[in-house]
Length: 197
Image (tube, rainbow, N blue to C red; front, side, top):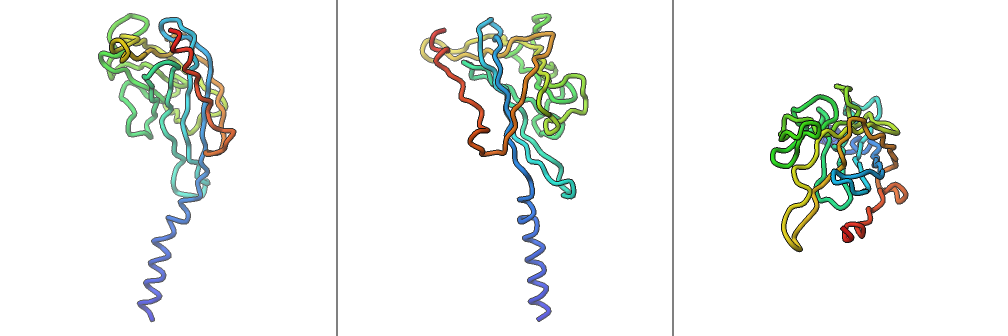
């Protein structure tokens, strides 16, 4: 009888994390705005990420994915991460994306960028900034430009351009909704404009 109670108690304790793991509220976040790419072409720019918000009494901290920044007509995406993400680069503190050697240049000087170069940042100057803490808007600062805007040849050519660098941050308004909500999905960018280029 004691063994039976012990097994029942052990089973309950092992199942507890699975039951309470569903305590989080899951959200999708996105921002879409018009801007120019580095070549001056008008494009739509999309930012999106997801969060898991846990109750204050739960021992797990809120979590997020990195922010993905996508430029219309480009296959190149940026991932802005903070110190809570394994993929966060060492080029700066806060929410950032570092350059990639051979792909990026410092916009102000034209010098080649590398993984020690800060290329994109959110709410620059906030060293402790976390993606989970972003509210209804954010400031996106772009400090790099692509080394090339297209790669490949002929029919295999693809655009790798991205949002034009600016010394003044872009103000992006963010929409938040429960994950999976039909009215909370980010709009699909129309790629028909890409065919005209």
